[in-house]
Length: 492
Image (cartoon, rainbow, N blue to C red):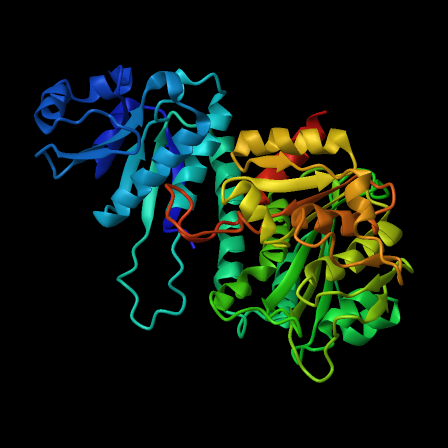
């Protein structure tokens, strides 16, 4: 959750006198902004004495001595290398300093914004994102929490719409992080269903939940097979948002892999870091975060979010390597490895959504392969798909939000590698080769000609090191990008 309780805009420089702290940016090469210089002409002397150089994400807290007010300078680095994402990062650094010093209210300028060719709405929204995402904490299970306090912030000459949208989008991302942080004995498929019902309440959103018997009876043999080993009841969840003026307008569809704990099944995983397999539902967390934001932003379009949620467990009833099952679209799947289960639950989800809703596009989010980390590390998300226009729009949205993506090829030669000798497809590709692409090649068998892109978020769904506005742990990746993608589509 975020520690920030309120953010508003102040237009007058004189309004800062009532603030406990004022925050200004400081570039290595040009120093303070004009606003910062107006506040206190003595600042430069203090800066010189402190040897503050303005290195990116460095900070200097200055006590003014009048009414206990303070000034926090945040280093912005070289002005020629400053970007909108560095603004977000510096805002994340600011909020960490404020929390450390237990400051309850502060005012901040659009730090370094005057050096960026970006409108005030985007500057304000990005600043808010950095503040809220950087303030994130997850202390839900601490029996003795630190003393909790809330922080109020004002943005000097900020854009009110940018504040509003930034708060909604950032809180939705924090919500996605919260879901992923919960342990699997708490965040079960049933709990994901409950969260979906909460999102749908008092809104234009409808929620449909299929239990094991229901989704098995409609032909989801692939999803059903993965769920066979789980005692915890699996759920297939659909959220429908109708915001378009034409209620019959074909929707856009986002789907999430919701494996709430992945042991690997009979092809069981090694024990080191198996605790992290509670994060195998981060795709589901992303789509719920998207819908939570959509509920408040109310875009004029129709949207579908779908989640196939289950545990992947070994047991007497579990699927085995060598088994063959039939998916919703009628294709047969040879199971070579029960730990390649995410693609199997998504196969039925994609097929069903495509068949019933005829979406304009489908995007799926999944922590699908460890192989993507070898290719892209924890910085970029690997994407693959069948529609260049959609891929290009995603890449653009990724650059705007700094949730950057990299397209991997999905050539026919790779798709041939998931063909089976005894069934239609197999759930692995060529041994030891292109594992991330093999996962997408398998999913491609279940989308027909509908524009579709697969996000392999196994490297970006959680981070192992703290970053300015992404703490270690779940990142909520994909929420901000997807909402920006919808903006791009709406304006085109």
